[in-house]
Image 1 (spheres, rainbow, N blue to C red):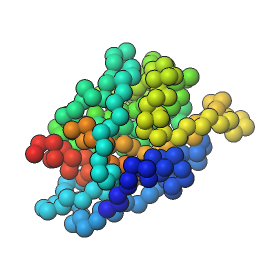
Image 2: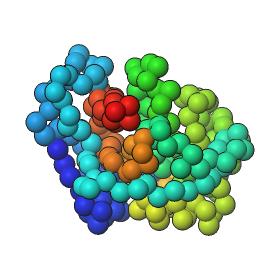
Image 3: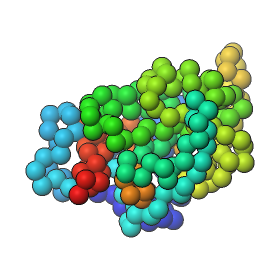
Image 4: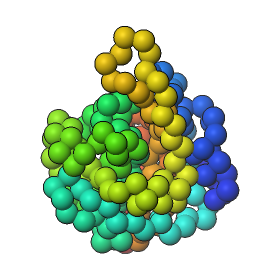
Length: 228
């Protein structure tokens, strides 16, 4: 099991640790994750086996309170992170013009949610834009609906978004698109998911490319903790 101190966590989120940054049109290599001492998961559904308590994602040691924030979702409603204590929250920072990493992540969330079944009622999947210039509320609404209308797509004014990006150590860089591209520009950005437990503690980092069953396994462990 990988453990990260606060300083290391946010350095990882900003610097070039393999698989944590998405460079415009280049997909980062998946980062394999192995839990320390875990017994493995049941056949492909992420269900923890007896006695299994290790996480596949990188853990914060010790956990810290997830930075609170308030933004606007795709329906025009305020989303405040602290309002969702009692649920597990999965945060990803991306943009709707992203060619592969962002849609790939949301497609994974859709599969994870379906596999969790009723357990997913206590998990919030949240997509925060890193491209507010193009990601209007209407555009987020249309984009999120392609995956799951219950997911949250968040935007806000630039000052509010920049404060959230800083709080989570999110790296963002606008770059020109390759010649002939119709998108105008691409955005290099941190390509990890931040997992907040039911008590509002930032607990895990899930790297892009983690297998679905490992993500499901980790979320189920956090859900079990929330019921204890």
